Image 1 (cartoon, rainbow, N blue to C red):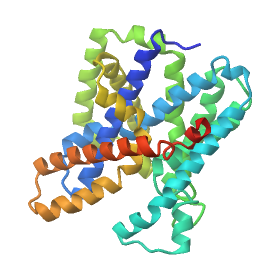
Image 2: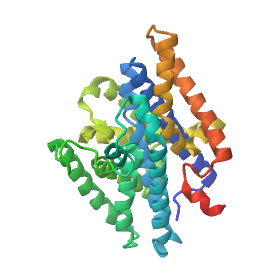
Image 3: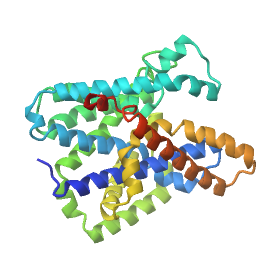
Length: 340
């Protein structure tokens, strides 16, 4: 049974949260390719950013899988859906391999092709999420109804992932992310489990989070990030995480959830949230290409140009996704082919 009373509103807050996180992912990539960084913005955006996606993925996954009628059914539908998503990820990597390598000046070899596409070393987030979902699929075959059956497995595997990264242990020498960003996948299971716990105790948590308590939590969060940002590690993509950073990330994500519940519904946020996979796959190429063009047109580096670049990247990606939704809606999700 869902812990929520207004499904439409719940869908919106989830879409709004994903949209805000994606917008800041574009900001981070704009910084990276343009070469101008606003340190204070990074202190805050990195506390949620991609980790909030894992949190929401856990919320949705356990909501769908541990409630009737899904929990009483077989795992076949989940297995098929996961396989189609994985195939879609590989298809996109195959299509993007040549323009990506051309843009970056990387080698065009069979080894590199297999490494990037079948090996899942590009698009780290979707690779890590796919592996994490496969692990959870194996656990969900048990059809256990309690979230606390899954949490210990997630925590232990997350600790193993952190230990492997901390010790620099790789399956293949010199290739930390091969195959399929498995270390990031293991680490992400802690955030996915946290999302599941939030789903299970959502009503109780929201009762505690009254207006005044939220104000205190928000003020404390801001002060902690400003004063202790150098003590936190929470960059899952780089396997850089510590316990303090993990708790601050969960803290930031819950605050962001409450913000998204409070803000009025906006079409722009709904659209981005409903199309995050498309935005994610374009979040590398579009900022990279646009940064090259902007630097050639305006050689003076400035934070104002960074802001312009960020906005342009979002607009261009939106136009591309709108066109693809019209002409090739199955491109980012092969499951849509089944409905044709």
